[in-house]
Length: 272
Image (tube, rainbow, N blue to C red; front, side):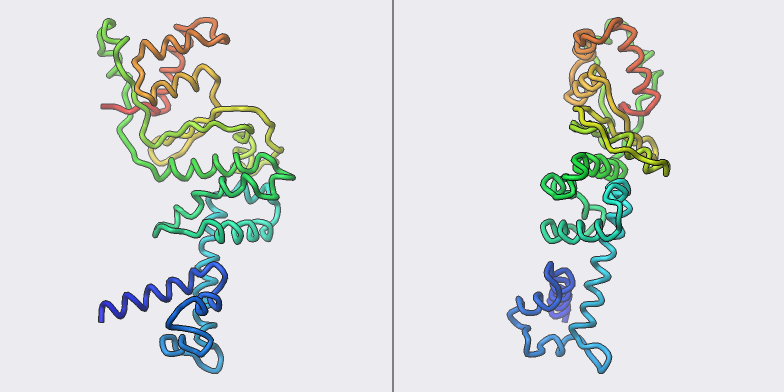
């Protein structure tokens, strides 16, 4: 009995998630076909056939994914400007990138990749970067957590030990390299303000979480380079050298102190 039930569940899953619809899913099954094999498994009646009943679950499956993607990509939805446009985008996306994991949180993992060559880029060339930032926010929210490094832990270090210490970023933090400055657009949508199309320009965006809240901000070149060095496990002396080498840094010591103070305040660094 368990084996039979498992086969039945697998069959219904394949039919409900069939990219081209239940009818084509039925045709693809060796044990089912236009002869009505599904009727032996799903009870139909005068109102709804067996196929129509499975179609209801297939629609529910799609619309649950659609609702989840609307929640995860509110700015992408706003840029498209129409629920029908987003519906069509999601339909095409799921055909090319059908979910492969049980968690619904994974369904939008490749939307930014899909948008790189999508016709929506003609009117909104920044939309793939926008979706990438929105997806990073989801991933950071769901990512692993660790206790934040407290300032007192650093104050207790002897001056001679500072050059060799290695700071560590929170494990969920991400640094994105984008070609469009989409942070302000996303913030405007989140705050329900009028938004403007993003400006083109290479930028690094930091996304991190403190407690249960996700934050993001654009980074200046020196801070981006410093944080990337932190993520690689560079010693503090090397991080200071990177900050000092930046052409826009007039006072490297003051700049490093400001960065470190902000990282600690933001809970960006991981304690040991």
